[in-house]
Length: 451
Image (tube, rainbow, N blue to C red):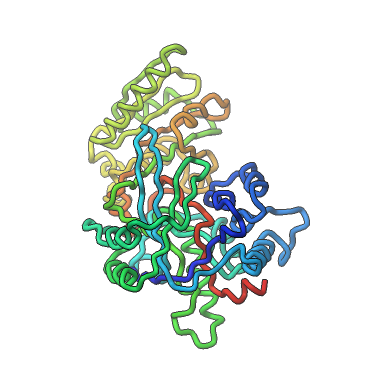
């Protein structure tokens, strides 16, 4: 189960860098080249220079983006741009954000270390991973001897005991970090280092299972790094710093937990015929059409999206838009046993009621003939976050179909993970993303200072 450890976090020194919002960045894997350039220009000490340093045409092993990240980390530690706390702490972290409907929410959690354990031994993944990102993050971890970004994990605590302990500890105190990011999300950090609260949190988390919400690649990277370092260690004890990883822990039973859907754009399928595709869909789904004209489209779209959400409360449902057709389609599964009739026991029971599994297994694989390998390589797939972006994609001649999904429910994430399975990639989008640059975890501070 969860073994939580307070740690001496490395934080930016506002006396050196000034406005802390200028040195923060989104997670590395959502940063475009344009955004990377913007963050480089924003501040000479922006965390982008460590988590996603630029590449150059002259890069070679030992002198590349990773070595430059390590050099900057060492330089900033020596200059006092980054400073390490003197006492072990847990960092209470809240994010206040506005939802698409205008409502405001605050997601609460805390940052600490967690002992690295193999999947299934107290920590559970819920999505597939790819090899490329893991190789990239491993090189960065090896170069810097540190991890810079939190793994985002969930735990279940209906009594909100941990939340209450931490909220009691920070009552009446100003946040140590209070920054608003580029998306208007207010990120606040309070340092909690009193021993009574820390002991209470550690004890309360001991019986908790952890579910990775975001950061699957980075967790697997940390496991690989631990295994590599363990082989090198002369007298391995299990308490070396590389046995632990920095995590953000959030209570799935608390308010403020938002999951957005990720939509799919299908392109470049050979011999695609829209009428044949729709006819095949009708074998498994009830099909409802929402036809529109140029003038009526906004109203029809709004009605269609409401119906999609409403239908999803009763049955597996998804939206569909086909290029060059002024129609939105709502697909609702005919009955709950469709997936069993088609796949029998080949698909675990816990998957048969998931929209993303039905889409990938029944629609993509069986109806459209997209192999599992092709799906994983994204040969004909593009993933997009917003309904508007997905629908607009149909204006591109190469794109053929857009699939619009409802959000995966938190209970489904938990059920799949506990059953020991993983969902298709991009099954969930936990919003908001964690801000990078709030806290860093160095495995070897002396190495950083000498860099």
